[in-house]
Image (cartoon, rainbow, N blue to C red; front, side, top):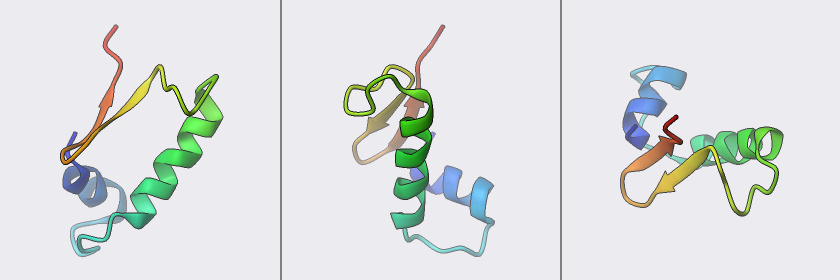
Length: 56
């Protein structure tokens, strides 16, 4: 998913383009679900695009 589509879905269409809150949210989520957040197994950052979930 693109960063902007996630921001719009989570924070609403009028939030803007600031990605700091989303990066903080994703880091917190990784700390909760990943064995080693530095080497994610479930949520991957796609630089310049957004985030990708592991396919089953």
